[in-house]
Length: 295
Image (cartoon, rainbow, N blue to C red; front, side, top):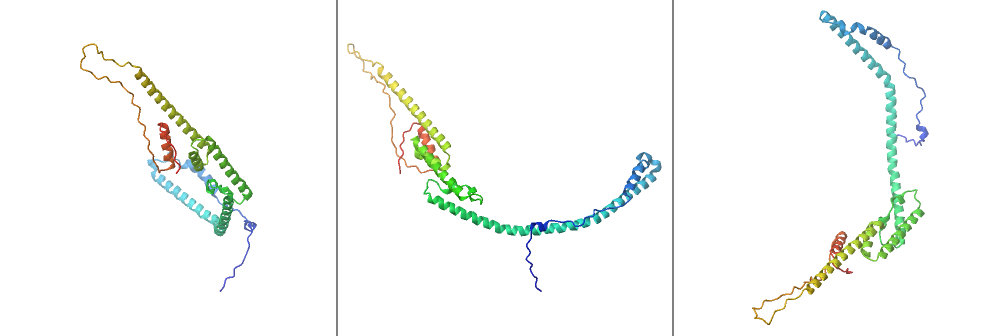
């Protein structure tokens, strides 16, 4: 036996729940009269009415009240289940229907997401082609890529404008760094890693201050050494009296200031960029003259 598949197109309005008949439950009982009776009878069953003399009465009244409460509550539960049953059936039907709709929607969502991902991939490829056409090689596209460019609402002409602006800014920032005149290659390398011109200029200022402090310390040291030499040269040298009987000659020594011996060593260092920067800072801070050798 074959099952015919009916192709039905569903509209959102078709799934709007319509209540054709709604009758709220109506129950007529003597529950209110029972409550009134209990409220009126409470003084009769007050604890002050019981003692050792009528303990058997207390036991019978306690048992009667407990049984009455148990039967009353059991009847309430029975009626509650009867009243809830129609709504529970309705609730189950709606819950099952919502589950079926959600499962169907999830399957369609997979197709939609795959289509969206293909569109994003194609758009990224178009952006990459435009980037390549600019012939800009200082940084890669990933360095400046903005994920919002892949949104459907983002027009390609706006993407081209933003890419051109980013390239222009990088070129302008490089020109600014070259105008500094010192540590240009180091600063350009740092900037191209971060694309943060403010932090790069701040680092350039730090290098300049370190050089100035090192130069001042070197000049101060040379000045002190020069003053020491002048002072030693101004001191008189004792003379030997040759007219009197000469005693065994005693050697006379003149103190001569020893200048530090300067040595030159050439090194080729291979390490990380951060260590190269740290090494340069150390040599600057300690007054060590060094020249950069282009490899």
